[in-house]
Image (cartoon, rainbow, N blue to C red):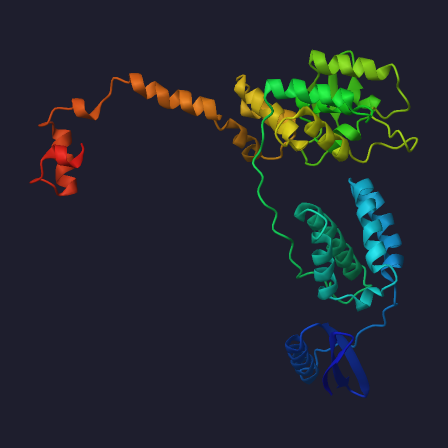
Length: 368
């Protein structure tokens, strides 16, 4: 009875009645000793329940079950499917019960060598959820990845596209081989729709009579909304309708009946080709919101158009832009109010000197 190490993992070995039990704890000897003490205390108090027999299943086998669940319950299944395939290549034949926190840490370290922190976090978050569901479904006794932390993602400032930059970007989009890139960017800039909402857009969501777009099954509870089409969006939609294929507005050119998975690579190439400063696709949504606020639209209207669940998300667009701040400060140049114009013997000045405890100092020494 005690603790022992095997294949870089620590186990506890104890008896419950006449039955000998061995349990894997993790990669720490200290944790194993604590776990053993807890088990012995539970046995002494009569609170220990014998573990039920669990079927040994490989990660690959479990992934097939999880995909069925994700397809029925998760909105971003297509993107998640791609991440699951990457995880299967890493853990494929490993037994689910043999995975430890170190496996997740190693995955995180290896991926960080060639991927951005946000990308690593999405894959890591995916596998952590898979392990949580395996625990919930009784396949695992506990989630081995529960305590594995995500990477710190550097904060990137929101960027607002300027009118001259928009012209250059749209021109670069036209020159790219990626089909539909320009109308996708036009839609993002003039509706504020999220990338996933645009790429999954169906013709049944477009009302050409009322010139509106019905966004359905979005990211938040308020994502179900109607967005009016301006002239530029309407013209692009009419042009796309001439080559309509199926119900998807932006069908995949490679897989019939499926939507675009992403336009990230083509968009980055267009930004580079345009010669403007680095820009993320999501910045197009920021640009749309900031322009609305700049033209005097109230925050409630902007919130509904963006599909934000909370007004606090929309309030950040109410912050004045740099040139607005400069103009506000410059207005002080013509201000008629000057502290120096207040008479020396005014009650206000005497109260100020009393509060500062400077009765004996000349007032001009204080710079007031």
